[in-house]
Image (cartoon, rainbow, N blue to C red; front, top):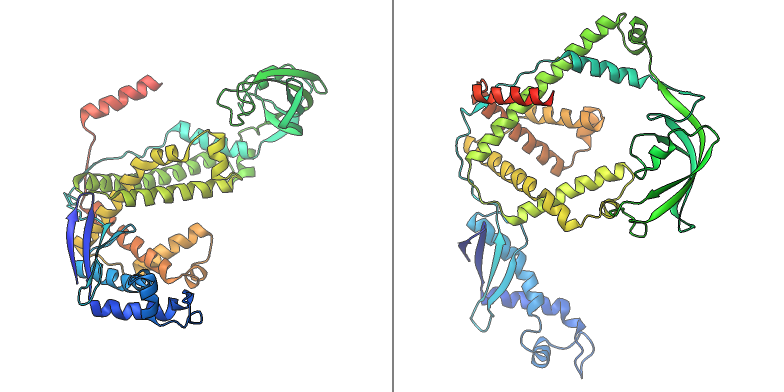
Amino acid sequence: MATMEKLEGSKVKLTIEVSAEQFEAATQKAYQKAGKRFNVPGFRKGKAPRKVIENMYGPLAFFDDAFDIVYPEAYQAAIAEQGVEPVDRPDVSIETLPEGETPLVFSLVVAVKPEVELGAYKGIEVEKRAYNVTDDEVDAAIAQLQEGVARMVDVDRPVENGDTVNLDYSGSVDGVKFDGGTAQGQTLTIGSGQFIPGFEEQMVGMAVGEEKDIEVTFPEEYHAENLAGKKAVFAVKVNGIQVKELPTLDDEFAKDVSEYDTLEALRDAKRQELLEQAEKNAKIQKENDVVRKAVENATVEVPDAMVERQIDSFLQDMGYRLQMQGISLEDYLKYTNTEISALRDQYRADAALRVKSQLVLEAIRKAENIEPTAEDIDEQSAKQAKRAGQEVEAFKANLTDEHKAYLSDLAAIQKVCDLMKAGATVVDKKPEEAAETAEETKTEE
């Protein structure tokens, strides 16, 4: 039997009663399992009767073990009875100890998934998104292709800004070399800002084979504390100088990098490709705008526990991305002189918004009684398989029940978004907002 009291902060207090008979049965089980660990004079270890142990160690000798037996079932029954969904571990307190016919009474305070008060989510107005493609954007796309087939060529002249230099260097502070300060055959693009401030600037004008001492000062916020703010000398030797040679933009270039015979045809194809991507982005932005407004219109008290769990997820993703670059999260924090608590704080607002959005979409799904079809789930499977670089059937063959449930939820939420998009009204940007945008663009130019 359980009663519930709602508390602030999307928390509830559950008071649970376990009958004396139930707890006695649990205590007997606890004795049979844990009685062997007690040493009682006159009895072989593990052979002392329960009453003898309780007389010697107290009537609560098996209480903790018995509580561990009754707690899981009682807790699950209580949350099912009250219809709440915990989102964190509960804080448990014993209210009444079992004695004779007196039942065990304990309470727990736990954060639960909050109730959502939905606002308007149909007929939402969203601004029309233009998806024009400019000549500059087409030029940039062609330039990216040009960069992809560029080649590096040696030059016989002094180093200039923008050159790629192959060099050896050895750094020292007060005449003593330091860890990580020596390298051979290092490649450096002058002007990239990859090295300590002042290093690259002093290389300008050096010739192949030339050696030179470069004096620099490490930044005060340098990740290696033993070097922060210190003056250092790098003995540098230039091994080679190269520049990037770009191919001429002509019909031959188009043939080399694409299926098209002319540069004009390649530009037209790139324009169409960019236009299709822009249209796709506009649709995604429309969905984001609709969801954002639906979330703004809803009222929900987001539990701190759910926000912290979302921050954990953000940090896990960040750690994975850093690993792909060969850096651990711990090293990143050290290099950037950042405390993990500060990093968590940076994510807090985004995490709260993410959780609220998820809760609102789930509430709309429930209100509209939306369930995905087998075709909806197959579509999500195909999308996930494509992202993973796998064949759909092979991807589906390895799905666990947990993954299947996740895909089902994704499909359902997509149907929620489709419902809201279908009912949204697209309006032109207000004249004053359009004027502001034009003025901002003019200022930037």
